[in-house]
Length: 97
Image (tube, rainbow, N blue to C red; front, side, top):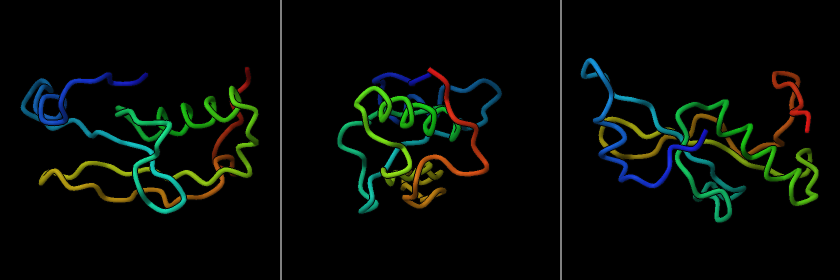
């Protein structure tokens, strides 16, 4: 589930109970925001699942595509939580289509 296009500040501050929501984004093999998967996600799992689905839709083998994930910090900076690597690994189940 993509979070859509609201500003990052609105997404982070709009959580109930005053707790900040974590917001994730995908990065390419050069640790830059991914050019084709430019969205914000509410979880690491959603981000990776969307990247796998995108690869499958475009006929790209997820085992050949290196994509990583960053999370937005409290200061608004981005911190890498998953270095760019092959999308399917023993910790993830393949997405069936």
